[in-house]
Amino acid sequence: MSIAELLLLLVLVTDPFGNLPLVLSALGRLDAAAYRRAVLRESLFAFAVLLLLGWGGAGLLRIFGISEPALHIGGGVILFLLSLRMIYGGAQGAFHDGYSDDPMLVPIAVPAIAGPAAIATVILLRTQQQVPLGRLALALLGALLVTLATFLPGRRIAQWLGPRGLNALEKLTGLLLNLIAVNMMLEGVRRFLA
Image (cartoon, rainbow, N blue to C red):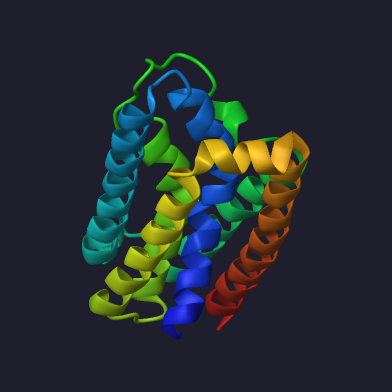
């Protein structure tokens, strides 16, 4: 896969546009400087988790005896369910209460940005696609920059797009993710039958 393809895939599975309403609701009471610090911190935590799993995820699969076809199918199912929630529900619905005004690590870094779909995708990229760690790190850096470019001006973006615009953007992202999920499941079944 090219860097551009990796970047697009990682942006879709980390879903900065779909997570923007969650970020705004979780961090909405912070002043501008605290909001920027929290967004930077949570984004860096999420991408550190993803890079760590890209580095050591294959070893975890071996320890637990999980095959690549199982990871393909399981990751595809998770992506599929996430995409349906993005299309028909709302990404912020699962994480709406029980957190402080300035959450640390949960729910923004994990599971919103570095959620099951992103984790499964990163592990699959390293195990099935044999993406070198340096290339994965570069694509993750690009996805981090897209996330920051979405979250940092998030309050202005939300005002500009309005609730309906944010909703439409999340649904479009969900549709693209749905197609990737179906492809992952079909690839898992193909590898299992081979």
